[in-house]
Amino acid sequence: RSGEMAKLTQLIDNEVFRAYATYTTIVLLKMMLMSLVTAYFRITRKAFVNPEDTASFGKGESAKKYLRTDPDVERARRGHLNDLENIVPFLGIGLLYALSGPELYTALLHFRIFAGARIAHTFAYLIPLPQPGRGLSWAVGYAVTISMAYKVLTTA
Amino acid sequence: RSGEMAKLTQLIDNEVFRAYATYTTIVLLKMMLMSLVTAYFRITRKAFVNPEDTASFGKGESAKKYLRTDPDVERARRGHLNDLENIVPFLGIGLLYALSGPELYTALLHFRIFAGARIAHTFAYLIPLPQPGRGLSWAVGYAVTISMAYKVLTTA
Amino acid sequence: RSGEMAKLTQLIDNEVFRAYATYTTIVLLKMMLMSLVTAYFRITRKAFVNPEDTASFGKGESAKKYLRTDPDVERARRGHLNDLENIVPFLGIGLLYALSGPELYTALLHFRIFAGARIAHTFAYLIPLPQPGRGLSWAVGYAVTISMAYKVLTTA
Image (cartoon, rainbow over all chains, first blue to last red; front, top):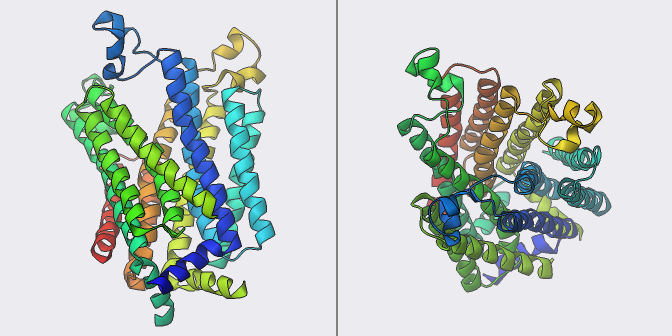
């Protein structure tokens, strides 16, 4: 069994794979943060979607008025969905890219630019920054993923 | 070739990885079930979103009235989206965690609590249970993922 | 280090894993294409959701009228979300399936039918084709994923 473990540990000991592990965990944690941002806005703006979530505000009409949409809540939710749409491809294509034997320098460049672009995208969405701030940060992350996909398809 | 296969089989033969494979498949199947729940409510509540889906109910106004939202359909869709938001991080962070060499006992604890929390979350959402039922089940799954992310980042 | 690399390269050199890498990259790129389709419809139909996205159309009421929903934009968004709901399970279950030692022929059959079904689903959604076109293409991809999950659970 310890022989098997050693084999597995080699995977996480590989520098490119370790970089993938680090940056993937960072962008996934950043995506998870969107749940807390949405919850924060729901609570401070008193804007809920499920009747059972407003029960602590009383019964009947007094609670019902909190079943509403709020611009800040909706903005956080759109940022979260955009993360899902872009981080899921990074998760899959990035893993295959890390296993396709890229140079460590090139791999780090891809992972770091992607992580930076997604963090910038979140700030651009939540502040919000004027366009093309959000559009550009989205496009950079998209282009990095396409570049990794190209490497995977030419290797596999 | 059989040598290569042997190498791969070692991965799935590793007990921690096998546990990851089992629980990931279970939570992904549970998430897929949400599609069937949504379809069930759409059909029984006659609440559709695409005009082509109501063509069997006749033409014109008689079919158009089924293009509407329904509370049960929307509730199932919210549960599905919450699964995506939480199971995608588990998929990525859990894989890296399984490769980071945790103790089998600790790994099983993480995977089982996460799977249990997500199943509880679905029941809490669909029944629905009064709060903080749904909130707590969400928080438990979230905390387990953070705990695995911590292990990945300190190992990588 | 080159010894470690050799180990990793064995993974991508394995024919089943290489097939997984190719088809996963294809379906993830197809999913990413939905972002461009949505952006195309937002721009041509002038239907935006963020106030900062309409700033180039002028200020005040003249820009505000472009903050609206459009049937084509919403259709593309629904197709994108359906991709997320179905391609995320393929990403995870497909990886575990590829590592469970299936026959190359059987694995290729699964991957190719899934990719074909999701591409058909996108055409069925965007054209749109009359039902059960979209429903069937969805069900085929769903069934392929269940079949792979069954193999994973009986192996692990």
